[in-house]
Image 1: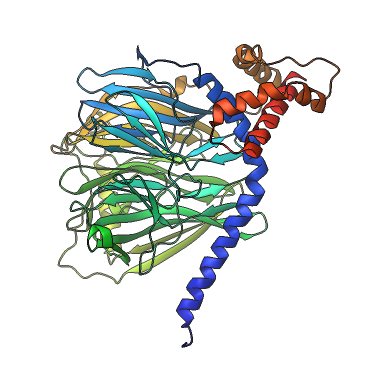
Image 2 (image 1 turned 30 degrees about the vertical axis):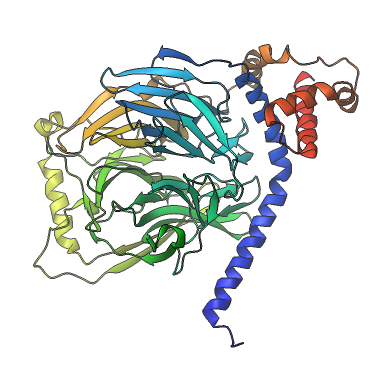
Length: 577
């Protein structure tokens, strides 16, 4: 056999390193996940009490992040599932399901038996078959203090015609993860990237899996070419002809040295292309260089795909450090990406001059400044002399020790003219212009977005002022054909949101938790003082085993069920002390 090339050795070395890291993360997080499995099982016990479908008219869903918003394939409805909310002290996870009627501007909460466990940062894809289906994969569950995480690797389908949830059990699924991306490409669900995190370790992925909607089987793809670096929270868009998918941006971090995590905001783009017949498919990665004006680097942006191969990107956040404080910009700008032409360009609403606001993080009062220079149109400055492309690399350190590396390739521009234009824009702002400002969503990150009938719907998200986080539940709509102005469907005043900071009393938290858990505790065998934990577990072993079997199903492994039962008994015992 011939000698292996240096590139082949590097690739194999990287694969071995990734495998070791994944094994390390899995081992260290095993105990954490067992504890969280007990908590998840408790919640599933409550869900098991649902025996029939109950639909109730309701106000808009509560504020939340990292849920999924999908357009119903057959009806004038949007579907909202799951998510999380943090009030300054406690993290709440959801698995509730809402339907928004577009024509009536009304919400309905649908309680369906045997739903997926509570989660956030999952992915949901609508498939127009069998009366419509909503496929949900992965996501995470967090402990109330937000310090521990359980990453799901389960696949669920909601049958929209019958309003039933079904857990799909198929071997070969991706490992547990959140922050991944999933899209429909022909008759396959394609899953890319994501991350898995425990209290001490984390790992980011760049693998690709395919789930066949015909055979209900998973397969891990092995594309040729240079793949994107591991990342989460990227854009993943199917090409209009179904020949592949496009990856843009995302976020990742690595452990640079002890207690210092180095993060990177990505702004590169890749094409994953499919070739050959269905039974002999071959996939390949290639880097692509779009024309036009790309969005400035950011994370937490929202993206949805409309008709005609046009994707729309909204908002996001880019952090930086100034004078030993964490600061940064939350955006509310819009960028369009033409998949067919491989071209980015900023979206300008026709109804008036866009303010392109940026909300400043880290300064109380939410000071706002002018929009980014990259907002200039892609055709500006044509025919004039231009400088060559410049790669800008900036490192910043956040309050938690994370070192952020922001990389951006800036195309040739006439910076002096851009500065002059910005100054002219500032001079043009007067009282009359201020009153004519467009109604638009405030700057934010992590909003949920989807497109239905050529209209972009934007729900929720978050922004920060000082040390406080504001989580939203407003709803906006923008006609992508007219591109005139935003329409407010659900309004929200962020100032009305309660925030519990560290100065709050522990007694208030304990009283709140006791009120929430009071009904559940009455259903479990009480602790009989002065019995120890081991004595309580022995006396009530069969009860907790039965409860664990009920929640985990008959196919669960005995040792796994036994561990969960012991953990559930421990959690309840400690709550009673």
